[in-house]
Image (cartoon, rainbow, N blue to C red; front, side, top):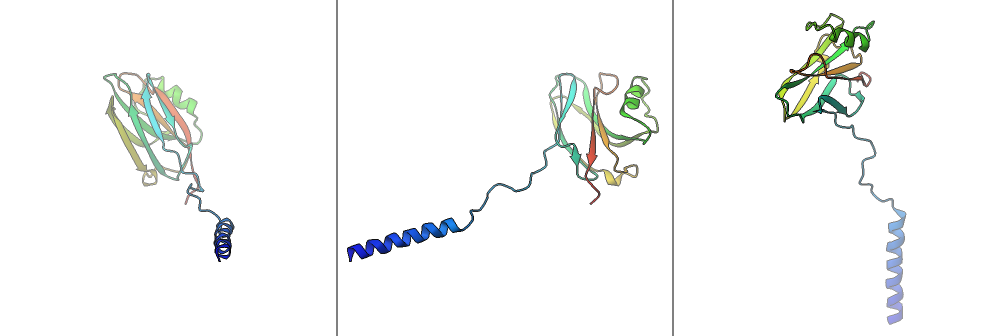
Amino acid sequence: MKTEGRIIVALMLLSVWLCACAYPTVQTTPTIALPEEAVIVFRDGTCEYTGPEVIPYGQHKYSWRVEESAKAQFGVITFSLAEEKTLQDFKDWETTGDLTPPGWVITLAIDDMKEAGGSYQFSRDLTANGSFKGDPIFMACYRTDKPGAINILGPFMFSKIP
C-alpha cells in the first residue's frame, strides 16, 4: 500500500504540473503602449519639451515646471499658422518687436504667465476654439524679461478626428 500511495501522489502531482503547463499564463503588463506625458521645462534660459509628437484630436494637455531662479514670469502660447505661412515667417515676425500678432498667427491657447520655481498643469479642448481647424500646432515659450519667444516647440500633429 505504501508503494501504491506514493505512485498515486506522484501521478496527482504530475497531472497538476501538466495541467498548469497546458494553460496560458496571465500577462500583467499592458499590451498597448500608454501615451507619454507631455512636459515643458523652463531651465537655463530656454524651454524644452518631452512627450508625444502626435496628440489626441483637439486635446491639448501638458504639465510644466519652471526650474529658473530669474525673477521673470513664464508662459506658453499655443498657435497654428495660416496655410501659406511657415514657422520661419513666425520667427521673422518675432524679430520685428511688434507685440500684436499678425492675422496669420492663429492663437489657440494662452497659458498665463507663472512665477519661477513652480509646477503647473494645462489642459484645453481646442475644438471649443472656433479658430481650431486641426492643423499642426506650435508652442512658443516666453519670459517677461526677454523679448520674443525663448523657444518654439513643435510642430505637433493631431490624431485623426474621432
